[in-house]
Length: 82
Image (cartoon, rainbow, N blue to C red; front, top):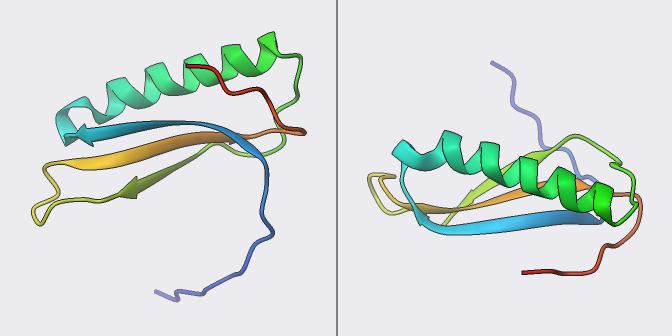
């Protein structure tokens, strides 16, 4: 396996953060989060500008609990809501 570090340019994204989540709720949280984001982006009349992403943060030692951010790059900033 060849691992390579690539620096990317920053992008604007609409995102949702979920805290203290476990693996048993991850798929459900991702499905609901991306659905909510796509609806909100469309409601604001903005365009999706890249592939969705997710980021795991603050995991405990056995990864049974962690924070997660779901995001979708957008063409321009959207107003924060909720």
